[in-house]
Length: 157
Image 1 (cartoon, one colour):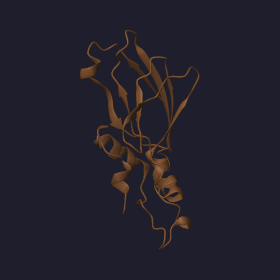
Image 2 (tube, one colour):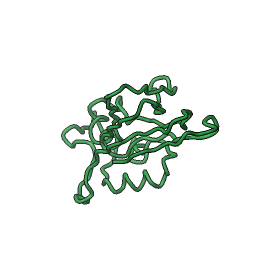
Image 3 (tube, one colour):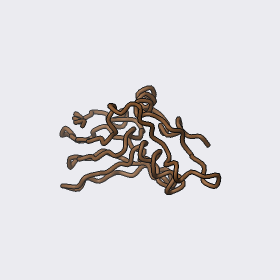
């Protein structure tokens, strides 16, 4: 879990809250306050969309590991992890959000994540290599969030 506290920014047009990134794990559940600031990138037209705060609503982001392990095979790479960013706080009030990340534990470090073997064939080859959660975290941290999709690092085709 991560709590984010964004102070008001006197020059929000000249500052980034957080850069474009995807989340490394399976799912992220986010609660944001009424000020907002989260944006997601439209997959089709590649423009930024404001995620308007709705009282009591939860925001669910698909993470890279879910894309690699399941969604790419089922959807032929149609569903992707959510590219998102946070704008600098242009409000006069502090902004708060809480993110809960659902990731596999590191205790099973021998566990490999990747396409289900039962779904791979000559007609439907694997799009991604098998990898460990620690490798995903390493790639995520090495790019310091200023990255293309982490999934690109594990893509075979």
